[in-house]
Image (cartoon, rainbow, N blue to C red; front, top):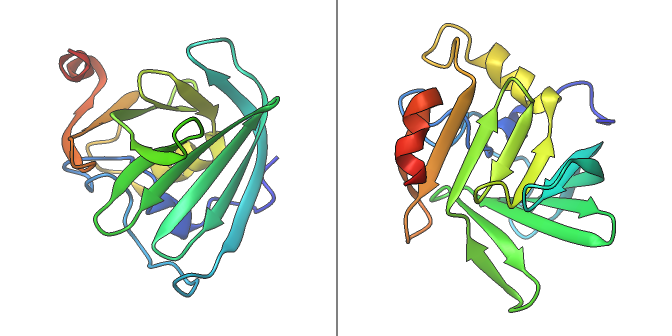
Length: 174
């Protein structure tokens, strides 16, 4: 369960929905309040996650503000997956334990009907209705209205190079 009553704007600005014409890669609102180099716990969420397209299972998501980035640590059983979203430029990476390096996220998507956020073609998915409901409320009256799927594709430099809604997302998956 989310420990805060709602999703803080600090988190919404770093998460990559809605993209393109709404606001590229995030609801970029207020700058983080933590000083550079200083970690600040933002929230802990008890929810469900899935790996490699498997059925969702219980997991814990811990969000930490690192100044210029936010870390989202997903603990799924004995597996830990961490996603880092940086501010300037806005990029997304996943920690690769085998190589002990950050690897670029190739694509990310949000599906409002299932309250799911996924990375790299469903390699990691998390159910986060609080965040997605906050996005819908904050972006009422925009081109996000009536949409179910929002997806972004990241280029080799880690920055957004394409975004789409609903059926048009099949083009990005090619």
